[in-house]
Image (cartoon, rainbow, N blue to C red; front, side, top):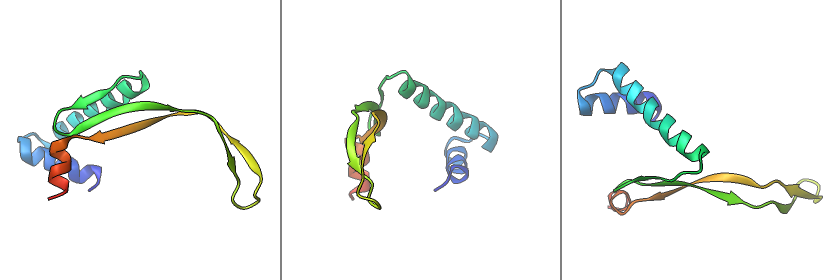
Length: 91
């Protein structure tokens, strides 16, 4: 499913126009993104939790040359699905 299809499903389920559903989806994703940038956790009961985690710098190997390289530290986004979400997927 892509964004256009998701907007249509939201519009159909809520009775909103497609434009209003797109605004609602954009506002939701923007709020989640801002929370991740600020290092906050977003918990949607029944759906899941978005959080960030620091990944330390490490040494890796270039697969084509075998040369050792340094991989920089970075922050990654984690998603842990909620129990209701997992149950629905595993039916």
